[in-house]
Length: 119
Image 1 (spheres, rainbow, N blue to C red):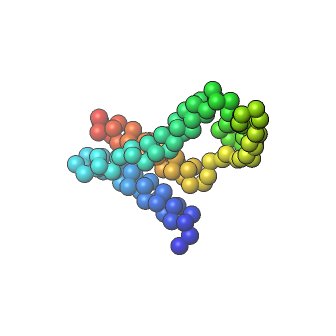
Image 2 (cartoon, helix red, strand yellow):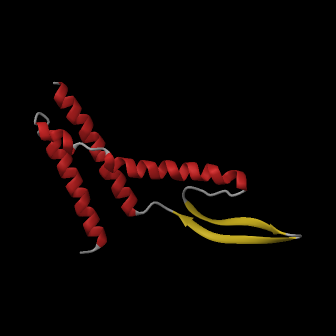
Image 3 (tube, helix red, strand yellow):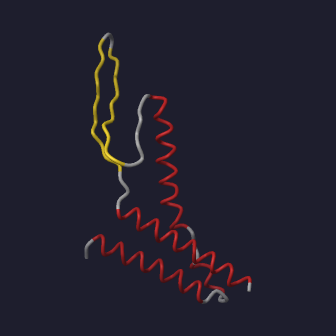
């Protein structure tokens, strides 16, 4: 099985378990299907990228959060300077987007679950 197909199956599994948890909101076991752990990883990753770009800025490095760029850094060695140039590209992969979508689906299901229980 291809990795993308497996990832898609995991997304369907996450969505179906949250859907089942929302439908059977009155059952004791339905709350355990409403975990937000799947949303924490993509959010922590995004916060880490944003924080990381702010940390390296005082070092003279400017790293964009998306697109192609060349990372230039001047290293002083004695009386000489060495220019380090690293071409790079930053993009969000399909895997990340699918993980974020699964997390958002879980968040929406948890909100519906809470509203259903309050009725």
